[in-house]
Image (cartoon, rainbow, N blue to C red; front, side, top):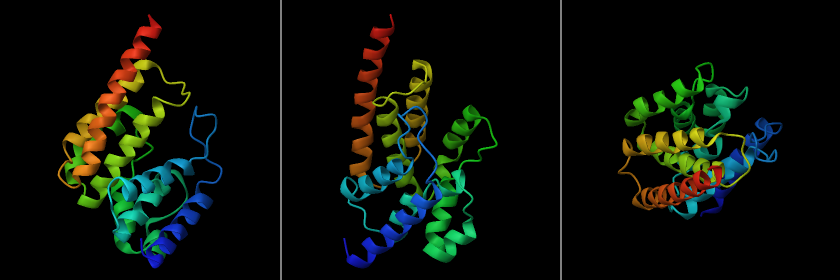
Length: 187
């Protein structure tokens, strides 16, 4: 990765870390929220072999409008309009109930830009892996529903990066096996 791109991604990571500094992943032993943002960005670089500046900036910032006091204009001024617009595309309206937000992700998936689609796929992968790996106070049914929702979303946005899509498919297979094991342990 070129040094100037690395410096910009690190600047965005520091910005996101400050904005999310008091936020923790629910049920994950209070892991810093920033871990999730770094996982998504790192996977786009390593697995997806992505090097697009706006894409990587948006990846590390993808939840900042949804979960902090950051504004679209602030992001556009600091990180460029394209990165800010991608983040805006990925931002859920948190005033809407959880199940409705997930339904809207499916309904609006095909409207996402190619760059937003790549981030959404990796976001789903990292969330699936996290909810089935870390201690999380979600009932098994909610975990199954999250996986089902993710499959529906990704079905509508394939075609941008075969490496990421293959990793998603591997993750789904792994998750389905993990959920079967969890079901056996519940009975």
